[in-house]
Every structure is written in C-alpha cells, then in structure tokens.
Length: 428
Image (cartoon, rainbow, N blue to C red; front, side):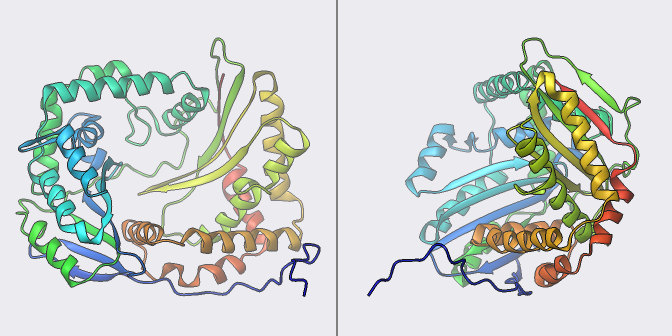
C-alpha cells in the first residue's frame, strides 16, 4: 500500500471559531500582594514575572530605572556577581531584570523542584541587592559601548529620531540618554532608586506552568513576608499626544559613509481600550503587517527597493502611535517614500476585494492561535491584559471580532488616522 503524501492536493481547511483561553487563578500573599497563576502540569517547569509599578515615571534622575535594572543581579548580601550566576546555573535557572516606562520587572524560569531556591534569590534581589563601584563602572562601560554601536546604525538612529520628533525630547516616551550622559551617573543615583522604588514596594506576581499549593507556600514564605512599606506608586502619565510635536513633518538626517537610508513614517492613533482596535488591526495587517501585505508586495516584490518593510502600531499606557519602517539604498529613499504614500492612499480610497480581506482575517486568526502555544505566551497575554486594564476574557471573542471587520471599516481606519499629518524621518 502506498502511503506517500500527494502534495498536489491542498490539505482540508476549516473556518476558525472563537475559543476560550485559560484564565488565571488568583491568590493573595500575606503582605496583600497578588498572584495570578495559569496552571499547566504538562512539564515540571515554572515561568514567572514579578512586576513593580514605577519604571521611568518615578525617576528622580532620568535613566536611573534602566541602570538599576542592569545592576540588580550583580550583587546581593554575601554574594558577588560571579557567585550569583554560579548559584543560578547550578539549578538551570534564569532571572532577568528589566524596566519599562511604568514598570520594573523580574522574570524567571526554572524547574519546579528548584522553585524554592530560585525564589529565595528573587527575595534577595528585592531586599538585599548590593551595588559595588567596580560592578557599576563595568556595567556603565558595557552600556556605553552598546550605545555607541547602536548609534552607528541608521535603523536605530531613525527610530530614535522619530520618537524624539513625535513626542518631544523631554517627553518620557521620546527621551533617551546619550553615551556622555550615561558616563555622568554615580552609583548613588542607582542606590537611591533601589531604596526608594524597589525595597518595600508592592508587587504583582504572574506565574505559569506546574503551579500547585506547594509553590504558593514558597511564594508566601519567601515573598509574602516582605514588608510592604508604601502604597503602590502613583503614576502620572503624560497627556495623550494627538498632534506631532515636531515643527517639521519631513526630516532627513544625512549620515556620512552610509549606503542605506532608514525610513520611519507614522502618526498618533488611540489609547486602549478602544472601539477601533479590531478594525485598525486588520487595516494595519493588510497595509504592512505580514509578509503578504500591500507594502511588501509593492516595495519589496514588485519594485525590489528593500529586503523588508513593516507597519505596526504600539499602544503605551495613555498613548498610541502607528509606524511604517524600512531600510533602502540611499539613492532610492524618495522612490520608496512615494510608493508608501501611494499604498496608503490606495487602501483608503480604492475598493478592497473580499478575497483580500478574508485572507488577512484568516492569517490574523491563525497567527493568534499559533502565538499562544506555550505557558510563556499565556503568561505574557495575561500580564498584558492586566496591565492594559482589559478583562481576562478579552480574547475569548477575538476571532469573531476580527472576522466581522468589513472592507468599509478598513477604509474608514485609513481615512480617520493615516490621511492626515504623517511624520516622516529618514536617516542615512
């Protein structure tokens, strides 16, 4: 019997329908900090994120949240950096620290049987971090070197210039530190941020994997007994930017020796939650969100101007913006920008076929399903919904909401958001 696959026959397809994502179970530690747990015992592994409100918005000195995130994990009471890394390596565990505009986060992964040992180190990170001058100077030099390398790339410089011009250089979303500014920091700046914003600050724990009562007890014993000395940080978000701050809408910064130009074109959008979200998402995908998008077909496939071009939109807390990004040969930048604007106009004003709409909707629905295929992805989805103030059942009707978007709604999104003033930044 021949069991070979006939590749001339397409596999059977079926219509995607709504489905329910697993919801987190909620607990409260003895110090009133919340735990959101997504249980899945398929593997004896745990993934966790510990989130403290604050980040850049509570800095006394701009940049201290970032440098503090780099320093935590480089020393705790009784252990230096090498000893910490050796300790974590012995358990096959990882702990990373990061900061954002409005949060400071510790993330980690470990085998369930070593959860107690790993969380005990998290306890030290939150209570007993020590910053040595030697480690601090090493971190500063590494950061400065990374900054200088990034500043050689037109892609980095164009994105940086776009955000500065869009928001204004003093806006938290637009401001960045130069290498010279980073060198001016002292270890006292970092120590003060740690003392004021990390020690004794309330936190929330998001955890997924093989979680049970024994894990909850470890969290209660190790983190639930941390004395919370203050209320949650009161965050003052900047006013929504509904108009581009730059006096110039077309900015070109030449870069000597560069053979390519990096193009960034964008505009304000909306905050979440918002009724336009699904229709705008479909519009963005159709224009430049995936490999079969209009911008990819024109700028890459037909014109051969670039290896890739992508459109996206980002929703910060109390802010949102849309962005088209690509890199092209220096002498082709004007041709590329002209074609980008043509595609925006065409999408907004010419009829859209039902076939194209269905293709995009099916791609988005399928891509969403593929994106939630692990405990880590479910953890990130849960954390994102909580941060944005959306209900945990938000994605239960996602497929039907995407499938219900019409061609007219897609064009309405173009006319509402993309046919007004656009900020165009080209570097290179």
